[in-house]
Structures are given as structure tokens and as C-alpha cells.
Image 1: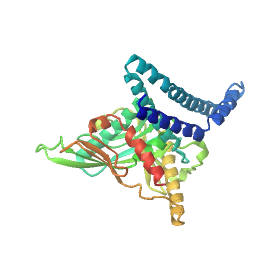
Image 2: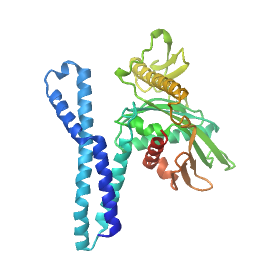
Image 3: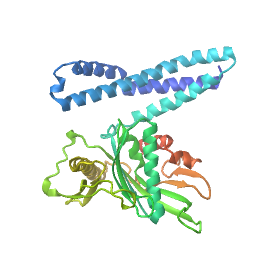
Image 4: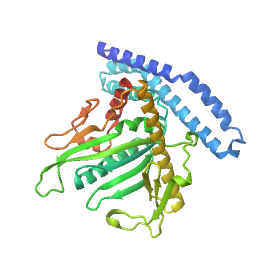
Length: 363
């Protein structure tokens, strides 16, 4: 085995050992046994909400244990793999396994950094077109596609709550939920203004255009958050759902718009055929927005006392350049790649990991 290969294996083993200590695998296994015992109680489903919490937690704990124990087995097998590879004169498979394990352990290491109050939640993502006219609306739709493709590649379900289509092309805004553990913790680093530079497909003179779109990421509210919204604080309007170009997608007034009067926050939902379901979804998004307002107010109070961290997580955070050269660059972390199309097709894990590490270092 080459000396540098042995060093990489040693570093990998050391990193995984640290992760195992941080995750406290023994405690996870103990918790799994407790939850399995609770899940086996026939009376559990007498309280469906509690039963759902138990089974969801059990599934999550078991997944964590499987992930770290699988990685441990693969790391421990690496030296033998390289010995066999050298005997056969073809080290390529062992080298590929080492590369894959470094990526997998690095990804798990990043997840252990997600220890914020809401990091383990699912995520509500809002995208709004900014400066740039029709190009900005098209850009907002491209960003939505990027996040949906990323979620699909990673096995996460996406529910689109509302899309407001622009007249010529693209979207004015969109709201969707990405389901899965730690979606908020991962995607929250995407919050801010995303800038696109390209030759505009909507300019008959082929001029370069700069467009902006704003991404907002919120944690999905849970019952324990206690975000009370009195009926007197909201105005509910119903209207007919519509698709691209104003085409009606529903013949009844099922779409719902809720205005929170004290803050002026407006949310809409039109993905369901039922007005009741759309109202419930819109209220859930409103609660997420109010939870974020509360979190920011509390953080501002801490910052005023000198206890806060970096408050400039900031607006313009990433540039996507398609012309005159090809590059996507994060302006906070300086992480960049030279293949924008790959990024726009959902390959954003490198940006997420570098963003999480950057946030950890600046908190």
C-alpha cells in the first residue's frame, strides 16, 4: 500500500471515530431499544399523534445507526481491499471505494454540525424573482427546478404549495416543502440572493443580462412550537386556482390567500382541490414564517447584548455565470465549480457542505 493511501485511510478512520463519539452510537442504540419497546405496545395507536412521533423518531434513529455502522464496516475493510487489489495488480476498485468513503464520511461529518434548534426539521422554501424582468422570472423557475432535482436525487419528497406564474415566462414566486430529516439545516445555507449572468434568451439582440432571485428557507412548524394565530389576526381570501398563462386548473374557488394583519405577511396555497386542505397548508407556511420572525427577534436581542454571532449571513450569496465564461461561485465560502449546468441540474451538495462548514466557523 502506498504511504499516502495509508495516511488517507488513517485520517478517514480518525474522522469517523470522532463522528461516532459526537453521535454517541451507544446512546442511539439504547434509544432505539426504548422506541422499539414503545412501538410494540398495542395501546400506542390509541393516541395516533403520539404514535406517529414515536414511529418517526424510531425510523430516524435506526437510519442513523445503519449509516454510521455501515461506514465503520467499510472503513475497517479498506486495508484488506487494498492488499487484495495489490495481489491482483488492479488497485482501481479499492481506490474508488476510498474516494467514495471520503465523500460519505465527509457528508456525515457535515450533518453532525447541524445542531441548531430547528436544523433537524423539514424545510419550507420560498423563491421570488427579483431585478431583471422576464429573465429574473425565468431564473426563479430555474432555481426551483434546481432544488426539486436535488431533492429527487437524494430521495426527498417535494410538495409544491403555490406557484405564481409570470406573464411571458418563468415564475414570480413559488412555495414548496422539502420533506426529510435535516432538510432545514442543510438548505438554510441557501438563503439569500442568487445572481445569474447569461446571454438573455428573451433579448433579440443577444445581449448579456444579469438577473436576481431571492431564496428564503424556513423550518416546518411542529405542534410543540406554540405559534398561536388568533382568527382576528388573519384575513382569508379564496379565489380560483390558475396555471401558466392564466389557464384555470380548477373550476371552484379552492385557492386560499391568508394575510397576517399584524405583520402584513401574505401566503397562498393552490395545490389541493379542497379549500380546507389549501387553508391548512397556507396556515402551516404562515406559522413557519412567524416562527422565523420570532427567531430573528430573539437573535436581534442577543446581538444587542453582544451574544450574537455574524449577522451578515447576507443577501447576495452566489453567482451563476453562463457567459462570457462558465462558473458558479459562492461569495461567502469562495467554493466554486466550472460546470453551471451540472449545478442547475441539482448537483449542489458541495455548496451545501461548504456553506454549513462556513456557518459553523462563523457562528
